[in-house]
Image 1 (cartoon, helix red, strand yellow):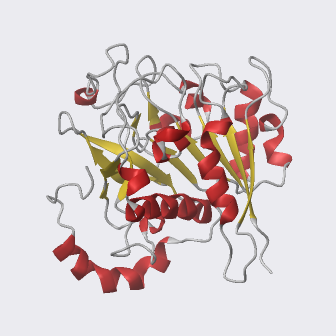
Image 2 (cartoon, one colour):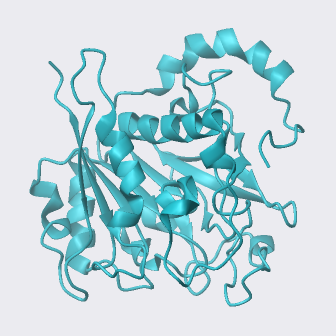
Image 3 (cartoon, helix red, strand yellow):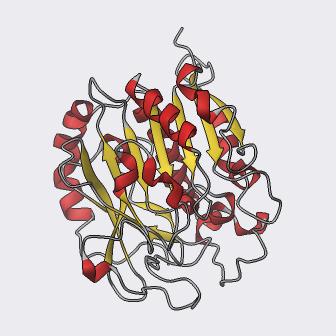
Length: 321
C-alpha cells in the first residue's frame, strides 16, 4: 500500500494569537487530513506548526532535509525576519533531495524573508525588495486599505471567489474530474494579493494561472510552477497565503483584529466553488509529491478542449460575485 504523503504546513512566525498563526489554516489542515486514497487509506499525513522563536534557526525548518517530510507548505506571514539563514539552507537541501515546496506570501513586503530560498525566492516581488520587473505592476491597485502599498492586487473581498485564467497548456494541478467541466477555475478572492512571476532564465518555471483586479481590471499572476528536475524537487509560488487561510474559506471563523475590510460569503455558500478550492489544495499536494504529471493530462485535454472553448471563453464574466 502506498504510504501517505507527509506534509508540513508551516508559518514563518512564532505563535502569536492576534496574527496569521498556523491555527488560522485549520480548514486546510483538516481538509487535507480527511482525504483518502482509492484503497481507503489516508492520502496525506499532515503536521501543522508555527516556527519557534525569531532570529534563530527553527528546530524543524533548519533540519527539514533530514526529516521524513515529502512536502513543505510555507506560509510567509512575516515582515522580513521569518526565515533564518540555516532554515533557508536546509530548505534548499530539502528541494535538492526531491522534496516539494509551496511558498505563499501576501501584499507589499509581507513574507519577504522567502527571497533567500533556492529558485523560488526570486519568483516573489515585494515593495522594498526585488520589485516586479514590469514597472506597470508597481502601482497601488487596492485602494480600500490606504496603508497597504503595491503590490496589492484586488481580486475581491475575503470570503468571496475569483475566477482565474489558466495558461496553456493547462497545468495538471488545475485538472479535476470531480469539478464541473473538469478544470479548476475558481479560487478564494483577497483584496490585496502579492506579486509573483517566473524568474528570468529559469527554464523550470512557468506562470500557470492569472487573476484580474476587480477594481482596475489589471491582470496579475496567481501561481508559478517549478517543474521537478534531477537537481531539485517541484515547487509552487502563490500570490497570497489567503488562498489557503480559513478566514477566506469561511469568514465566520474570524481573523486578526487588524483585518477590517468588508467580507463576502460566496465561497461558504456556493458548494461548487468550495469544491474547486478543495480540489486545488488536494492537487497541489499530489503534484508536489510527483503523483500528478504534465503528460497525464493529455487524454483529458483532447476530450475537454472543445467543450472548454464553448463553455469557458476568456471573456466570460466571473461565475460568482
